Amino acid sequence: MPSAEAELTRVLAGTRPLIFRSFIYGQLCQHFKETFGTGGRCDDVAGYLSAWPPIQRYNKQPSRT
Image (cartoon, rainbow, N blue to C red; front, side, top):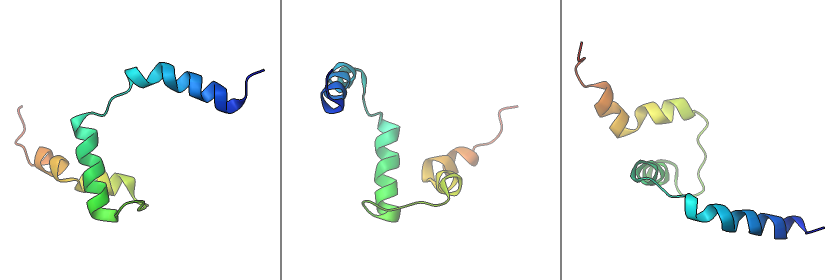
């Protein structure tokens, strides 16, 4: 029976080509590091996300109805 480490290595090797970082994810990570520091912690995820500048700009857009 393969070890857990060997099995994880095998699974990760197969999924790695399918995983990519989107531009938005990169921006969100950068903002998180600027706000909380590397390795920081956020206890209010909803509040953090709603205060993220791109969300603030989106929320200020006029309604299209």
